[in-house]
Length: 417
Image (tube, rainbow, N blue to C red; front, side, top):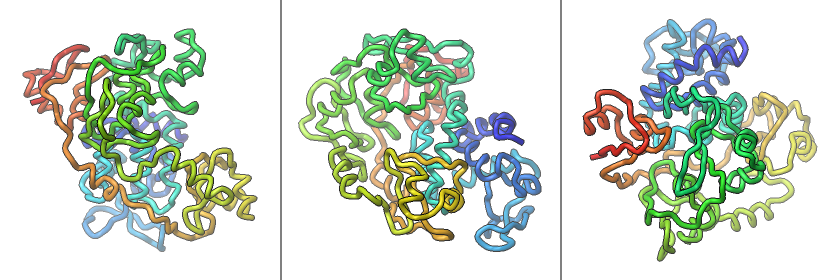
C-alpha cells in the first residue's frame, strides 16, 4: 500500500474520529502513516494496530508480540483498523498526560505534533518535526478543514471572495497556495505574503482568510478577548489589522503571545502590556541567543537544533559523522532537515533536553475565556467550528438556538448563553 492509498483508505475514519473526540484528522492520519508504515508494518497487518499502542496493565483483549524497546513486547490487537483508530482517540482523550493537547486549536497541527512528543508518545526528540513535515507534505490539514467548515465549502473551484473590515479578501479553498491566490487575483506572491504577515513557506489551510490589500492600523471594534489557541496573527487576520500595529497598540514585542482571557486593544494603545504565555520570547532576545550559540547550537551534548541555512550534509560534517547515520539515528523519512528541527547525534541515546511538558506549559492557560452572549456567523463557519471556539458542544448550541439541524448562514446571530 502506498501512502496515498493509505490516506484514501482511512481519511473518512480519521474525520469521524475528529468529530467524535476532537483529535485533528491530520494528526490521526499522520501518526497512522508513521506508526504503521502506511499500513505495511507487521503490527498493522497481523494485529490491525496502526498506532503502535502497547498492551499495558488495563488491556484484556487480543495482542501481538513484537520487538520495540525490548524483545517480544505486548501490543494491542484489534478485529479491524477502525477499532484501532477508535482506541487511538480514546488513548489520547482519556489520558491526563495528553489533556493539554485538547486545549489547542484543532488546526494547530504543529502544536499537536510537538505536544505528543513532549507528553511522551514517542522517544525520538525529532518526532514532532517529522510528523509536522509529513502532514504538510500530504496536505492532511485538508481533512481538518472539511470537518470544521463542512464538505459543501469545497465544492466550488476558486477561493471565495469576501470582505473583512472593508477590505477585499478570499476564503482559501482546497489546494490553495500563495502562488494560486496571487495568480487568481492578479497580485505578486510577495504582496500576498506581505498583506497577510506570512512566512514565505506558509502552508495555506482551506478556509483561511487572506487579504488582497494591505490591512488597516485599527479595527471598528475596540477590544478582542484572546480565546484558547489564538495567536496575535490570528487576531490580526480576524480584524484585518496589521500585526505590527496590533503589537504596538498592545505594547508587545514580536514573538510574544498573550494568555487566554487577556484583552487585546484594537483602536487605542493599551495602558500596560497583557500577560504573555510563559516561554514566548521577544524577537530581539531570541536573536541575541542565536548569536551566542553560533557554531554548534545544541540543547545538550547529544542534540543539535537545525539553524536557518544548514543542511543535513553540513551538520554531518560539523559533527564528523555521516548523513546516513543522522538519518538512521533520527528515523528520518528523507535526508532533509528544516530550521528548528532537533537531531540526535549519537546512536541509541535518549535526549536529555530539559523541555517542560505541554501540561506544565499550559498550567497558566486553564483560565476560562470570557464567553460573549452572541456570535455572528462568519463566511465558511460551521456549528462545529463555533462550538470549538467557545468550548461548547454542538448539541448545546443547537438547543440554545432551537436549531433542528446543523445548517447556519453567514451573518446569523447565535446565542451562546
